[in-house]
Length: 100
Image 1 (cartoon, one colour):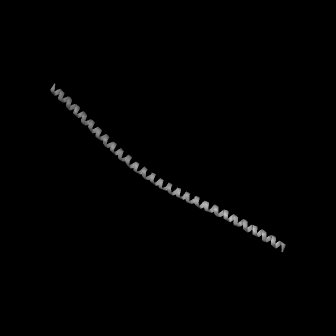
Image 2 (cartoon, rainbow, N blue to C red):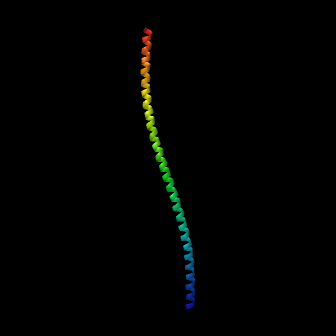
Image 3 (cartoon, helix red, strand yellow):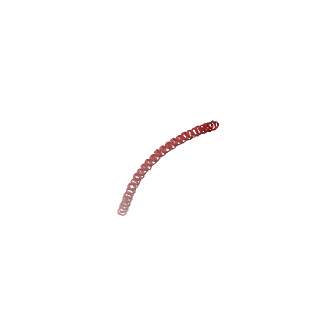
């Protein structure tokens, strides 16, 4: 009975060792997967930072273009006023010439 108990214990010990090896293999595989995911996360963060920077630059360019548009609109209004004044003066000069 002691021999049977010993053989049973040895058999259980062997099963536990095999299970331990499988667990170690699973743990190594999980560690590799974790490292891969960490690397992918790093790449995603770098891409996010790059896009964030590009978006910031684009927003700055949009703001600059809006300022330039406003400046050109103001200049256009001023030039239209100047043109109206010149046309009035021309009309006045034409009238004066016609009377001469």
